[in-house]
Length: 165
Image (cartoon, rainbow, N blue to C red; front, side, top):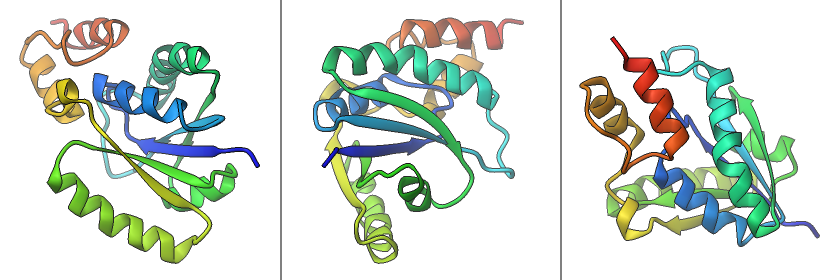
């Protein structure tokens, strides 16, 4: 049986925290599906197509090095439904701290009730990336700050271009 996992998020933008989770996940699975959630009520910093491109540019080399196949999709329904649609038997969730754990445990319980065959796997963030959030990265970049320590190089360049005045 193939080990297939779905890793969902907005990836707006891709951060070093996301990259840390992908590195760990690729050592556990044969195929990792990165799923970008599309929510009509939200206005992302980067359009969907650009986020898809960033995800593949940053995650594909990491996955290839680990011998894991990676693909990227978008979804606008429940994460667990997207997982079932792509044949994933695991949901990958990164944890930065206890607050994340409390929230993610609730979601995992609900997902388990809806789809018993899809298991949630929690991956703890490496210490260096624990404080990183996409929200903080957007705020820092938007105010002209240097985000090069928080995002991959290619993403830093896209953020700089996005906020160039």
